[in-house]
Image (cartoon, rainbow, N blue to C red; front, side, top):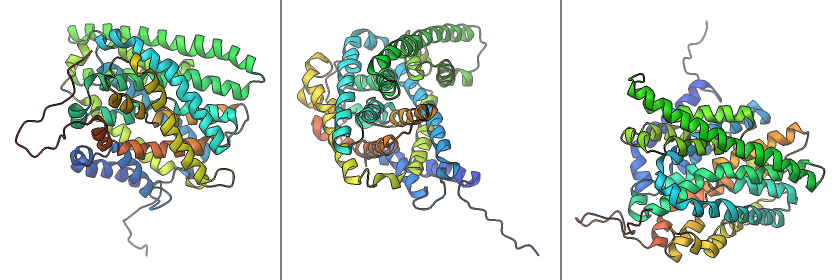
Amino acid sequence: MTRFNPVSIGTNNVATDAALVGGFTLIFGFVSLAVKEKLFLSESLVATVIGILFGPRVIDAFDPFRFGRDNINNITLQFSQIVIGVQVMAAAVSIPKTYWRKQWGTLLILWGPIMFYMWISTAIVVYLVTRVNFRDSLIIAASCAPTDPILANSIVSGRFADMHISLPIRYLLSAESAGNDGIGTLFYTLAIYLRTEASVGKAFIRWAYECVAYEVVGAAIFGALVGWLANWSLKNSERRNLIDKRNFLVFEISLALFIVGVSAMLGLSPFLAVFVAGIVFSWDGWFTEETAEAHVQETIDMLLNLTFFLYFGTSIEWSTFNTPELPVWRLILATILILLVRRVPIIFALHRYIPPLYSYQEAFFVGSFGPIGVAALWYMAEAVHTLHEVHEEAGQIVPVIQFIVLISVFVYGITLPFVHLTLNKVSTWSRSSAVSVPRWPSNTP
C-alpha cells in the first residue's frame, strides 16, 4: 500500500520556486514602505539577502548550480539583459526633454572622461591588489564602469529622495546610469579585443569598425528610428481608438523588450539602442503625461528587480572567494579601494564643469554614488560567453566581479542615512506637526 504523502518540497522544484518568489514579494510588500523609508534599506539588498538564505549555501530551496555552470552563465546573461533593458527605458522616458537639451554637455563629460577614468582606475586597482593579469583587469573594470540604473533608482526615487536630494541631481544620476550601460560597450569591447586579438593594433582596428561604427553608431540609429516610429504609431493608434488602455499602459515595456531582442539579434548594443529609443519616444512628453498615474511600469520593474536579486543571491559562487590564487583579503581590499578611488577623485576634479553640482557636499555625494550591479553581471556573463567561443578561459573574471557586485549591493543598500548626513538636510521623519518641505533649491533644469 502506497503511503499517503501529499507534501512535495524539493530543490529547483517549480512549486518551491514560485512559493519563494511570490512569498517574498508578498511579505516584503507588507512592510516595504517601512523598510525603504524608515530603515532606509533598498529592496535589492533585501532580495539578495533572502536569495542567499534560500540558496544552496543555507536552506537550498533553489540551486542554480545544478543546471551546470554554462547554463547559469546563460541565465544570468539573458535575465540581466531583460532587467536592464526595461530599467533603462524607464529612466530615459522619465526625464523631460528640457534636461537632455540643457545638460547634454554635462552628460558627455560623465560618459567620456569620467567613465574612462573609472575604467582605468578600477583596472589598476584590480591588477595591483588581486594580481589578476592586466588584460583581464581591463575586462573586469569595463564591466564595473557603468553605474547601475536599478541600484541608482533605489536612491533617487521615493520620499527620502524627494525631501533630501535635489531634482537636478536626481535627473543627473538617472540620466547617467541609463546611458552609461550602453556607452560601457566601448570600453568592454576594447578590453575583450585586447585579450583575444594577436596585437594591440589589430584590437584597435577591429574595435573601430566593429564596435564603434557598427555596435554603437548602429544602435543609436536603430534606437532613434524605432523610438520615433513607436511614438508616431502609438499616437495614431490612440487617436483612432484602436488600442485599449491595458495595452497602452504596457507599451513602454513591450517596446523595451522588442528593442533588446532585435538589437541582440543584429549584434548592436542593446542598452544604447533602448536608451536612445526611450529619449526619442518620449521627446514630446505625451506618453509620460498619459501614463503618469498608472504606475504599471514601476510595478513590473519592482517584480523584475526583486526576482533578479533573489536569483543573484542564490547564484553567488562562494567557494571562489577564498582560493590560493585569489584570497578573500585581496578581494575585500580591492573592493574598498575601488569604491574609494573609482569615482570620487574625478568628480571632485571636474565638478565645476558639472552645472547641477552647487557645493562640495553635492560633489562628494555624486562622486561616492557609483553603484555596481546588474550591468556588471551582464558584462561578466557576456565576457565568459565570448571567451568560451574563442576557446579561452575566463580566469578570475567571475569571482572578482561577483564579489564587487555583492559588496556594492550591501553598501548602496544602506546608503540613504549617509546621504542625509552628507547633504546636511532636515530629517523627513520629523515628529513636529509642521509640514516637511524639501530644503534643496528649486533650480530645476
